[in-house]
Length: 169
Image 1 (cartoon, rainbow, N blue to C red):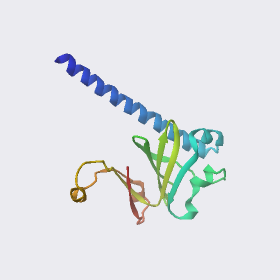
Image 2: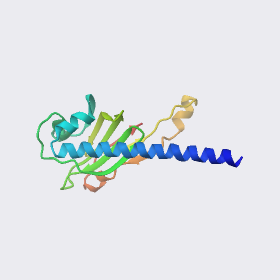
Image 3: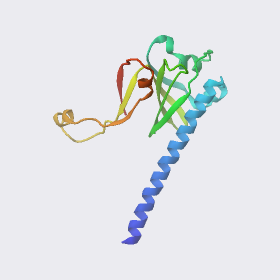
């Protein structure tokens, strides 16, 4: 009995360590992306971003700094992450500009060590929730609340009212 309990606790510890290792490597990859973008290192960007990147943008067209950088255009805007959080293959990165007049959130999806999708939000408050597959009825599902996994905080510090969106994982 003790041996079985020990084995189960070891399996749990190993799976947790594996998740943390995955989170750590995902965070390192994302930090590498921002360092490469901010230093105009296009060789590194090409290595870690999929050629068929799916990009989604919410914000004023004048704030499409990331797309300009990804397509080789120069930009004086610098993405300095203030928080990085992982939810499996999705990495949430949040920051703001030096004057704190622009806040941004990126939701990046990673697959096999490359970034395959970027959802970009400027001056937008973002709440992340998870929808789980279940065998409950539609009526019962309507009465359930989806748990909040993460909320942006930088948008609160820019000192203006911003729209709020929900991202469901």
